[in-house]
Image (tube, rainbow over all chains, first blue to last red):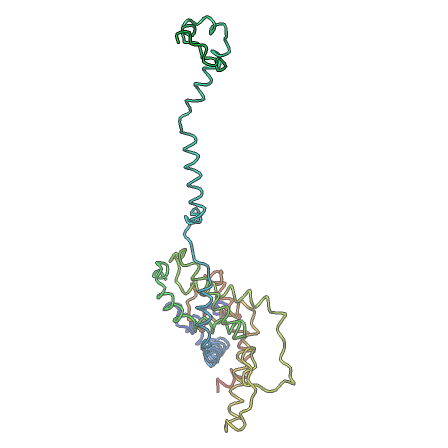
Length: 152
Length: 190
């Protein structure tokens, strides 16, 4: 193994993460290369120095602030909640729908009758020759003053 | 996390308790400001909580968690890179001169081993500053490798690079640290 190939192996070697065959290869190289041996020892020293840094604990307020931030999150809605309107809007929309259905389905015969009557009323010649109409009792005149009844 | 996805709030509290310390430490070492690190850690948990229903266990939970944390940290570091103030040489000597953790050193009466204490603090400060001087991505790689003990596959997913690129990144980072910490490394060898 060359010194340049050692570069990618040193940390794995120090971590004990190399395969057995790789480890033996590295140790074989180290046995003959003083420079790489020195580097391995110095990397080991660096690793030990990094261990000297103390671990800090989160401040006592950490959990309180964390829970406050969690509580401040808006309530999560599922994807279909987007289609769910507010109750008042839902009631108004339902009433509007009912009204539309009612208007659309109610019977509309009276206007049809009126439309059929119009040609009859317009054709006055037919009316004047209509026998049934001539046989109807004549309307009483309002200004007769009770003199119109000859049988009395 | 699958329990959290199913709506179990208590499981989220368990996740919070299990990961808050490693997350705050990782972020603190990335951004060098305790208050900011805690804010970012909370932001990570908020994002996890918000995304709980979309969570797909295609990767380890820690990979997902630290990927969010790393992205937030890298953005934060880039945003504040030019805003950070250098500590004046004339400022009072402090126990820990990091932002958000200022404490004036007044230990002459309290600590009889002040010299030893100062040596240790100087040593820690050197280590911290050596890490801080690393380029952001190298720093994240070292922190995830050294302190979270994640394997190369996980770290490469977090940093979105190949395993081979990660090994190269880590090698360069350790080389830089070896040079920066040369006096301490030399002492260590004795």
